[in-house]
Amino acid sequence: MRTPQVDKNDSTPLHEQVAAEIRRAIADGEAAQGDRLPPAIDLAAVLGVNKNTVIRALHILRDEGLLDFTRGRGVRVVGTPQRGAVIARIGELLDFARAQGYRRDEVVALIQTRG
Image 1: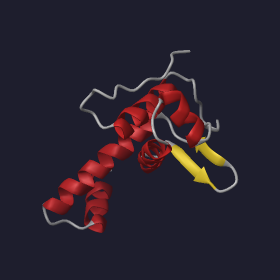
Image 2 (image 1 turned 180 degrees about the horizontal axis):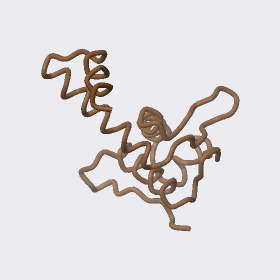
Image 3 (image 1 turned 180 degrees about the vertical axis):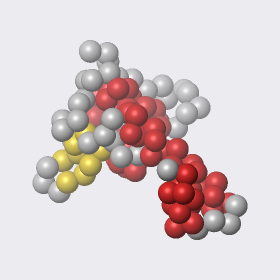
Image 4 (image 1 turned 90 degrees about the vertical axis):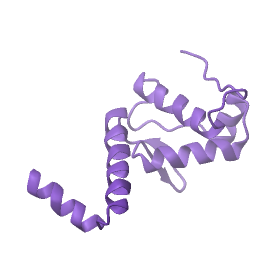
């Protein structure tokens, strides 16, 4: 198993580096669907970053559909890297469509006509 690491001298924000490390762990099978992640404070200690940096990264991955937060059960892996990539692209499409004056429901209707 590879030791996760972040580079504090890198121009990439630390929370994005942490998210990338967790994505990599999921892609490499180190964290599979259904697995619980260690608490944020433990991840922060391993990575040498603040707990809030880890929490910010976990929220990004939740928004990508890779993680689920359940009160009392912690953070679980629920998606695959492929699903996360598709969700990220959908977000980009919605942002682009909004900039062009489309509403979300209009974008959904356009997609359904192509399907």
